[in-house]
Length: 173
Image (tube, rainbow, N blue to C red; front, side, top):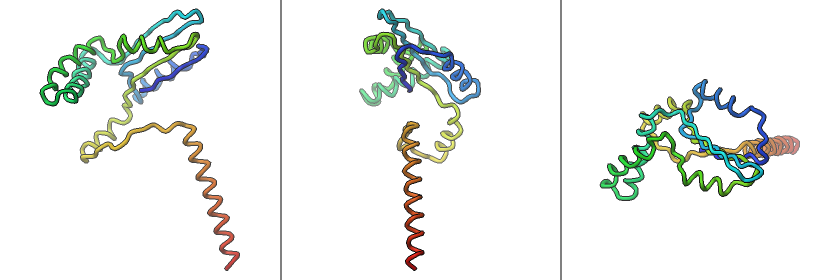
């Protein structure tokens, strides 16, 4: 799930075409998207979107509900949760009125926020191979671009230090 805010509502028409390109190329699929825009007077506009059809949405709701029911009441809660979850997602959206209310209340004026639950379709084959090998996911995190830059600069610094140490050790010999 990715949550973004856009202070000042300054859009240049680049975001939706890029999302459409990723969907068209089979990189991602939008499970659910909630967009809330608050203007300078505090009026809000809400839009939702999903790439799931009715059958997929109710199936996903059943799955989520079954997991929640099992977590709350053990095996007895599994079936009740599956039924409740299927009904909950029948409209095709994971995000609900409570999410809309919370985002609307937290949002500053003249700001847009989007919550988007993405399926990384590019990973299906890899995840299937992991499952066939009885692999267990231990961690799944995204690394921010800034962290990659930091890691890169640390690696270069360490490389320079090693080169300096190596050149110093050959002079001593």
